Image 1 (cartoon, rainbow, N blue to C red):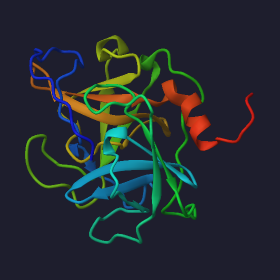
Image 2 (image 1 turned 30 degrees about the horizontal axis):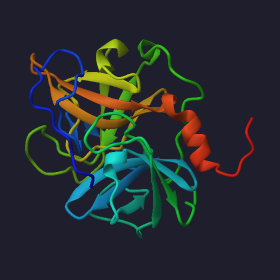
Image 3 (image 1 turned 45 degrees about the horizontal axis):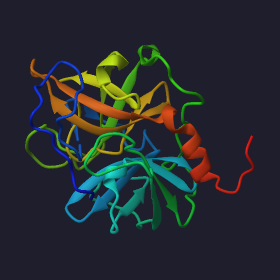
Image 4 (image 1 turned 135 degrees about the vertical axis):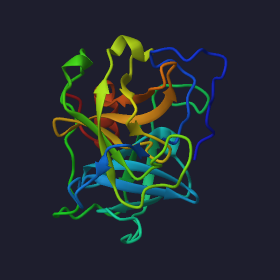
Length: 241
């Protein structure tokens, strides 16, 4: 995985300021009904894991900090004890992403063999336009195979999910983010998974930190801010509109 950045000099405020732990698992929440989230993608690299989600038959979306030369990508997974054949991919991290600074934490993985869509493997919709007011997003949830405790433990063997409460976007510090806070949410191992609101993938799990009140604040890359880059990467030969 990428080298992680860590800012230790900042106070833990009630907003999502930098100072965080990357390679974020679902704490709290519940076990997902098997294959009820068929867009979810399990990403493994040596001892580390990430999540991703299928956005087209030939593309998976995840976090740029999950990039590695040894990514193993699996579709249609519920229980990681039983993994299907690995899918070879070509990574396309956002060109402005940097290992030592927040922002632009988005990556597309092109599948060398397009997925066959069925009951256990499906795509999820992306936002159609920029979200100017994140407060309008309702009924949001996150999911993944990461740790079930923020500070210790082992990754979950089965997919888990949790509802999250979004914060006002002004508390997210950078313009390309959506934030949530609470005692349930993503932890280590859930990076790259989707923030799903109304059956649409609105964000990508990027990092989390603990606030002064004990709650955890998670920062998600706002997918709607990258629609043009997504289109250009997935359709490199298309004519401009």
